[in-house]
Image 1 (cartoon, rainbow, N blue to C red):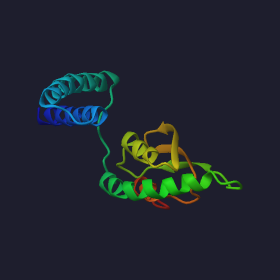
Image 2 (cartoon, helix red, strand yellow):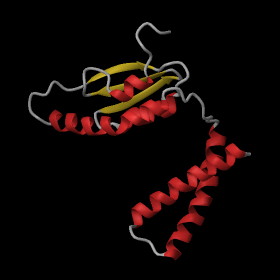
Image 3 (cartoon, rainbow, N blue to C red):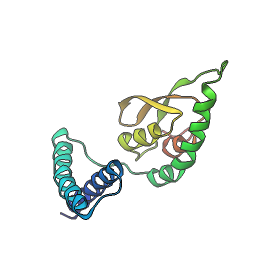
Length: 151
């Protein structure tokens, strides 16, 4: 019961936040409408997640990856800007094997949030295929990827 309420609260907060960001300065009446609409959207989002059979699990490395995300976004923007220059070698496709306990859904989302990394596929629960502009793993990738030699 508590997990259901937390999930609905998170969905409601995210949807209300998006509404406020897209509308701009809101009046009290608009805020009430945004909250009520977000509550309906939260129930719909939870229902769709349950219907799709998606379960939240595998949070190992999530906090470390979230801490690394802002710096990764700034560095990614710099790399993306540099990639527009003539003669840039381009990116490369690589497989990221996720560490045990990391969920492919949230890990792929955080990897895709950096401007220099594009998630192409999630073939397995423990693997993500990315196109990256940087030759080595970035901080978010290091937080979610297996260490060398780990199985």
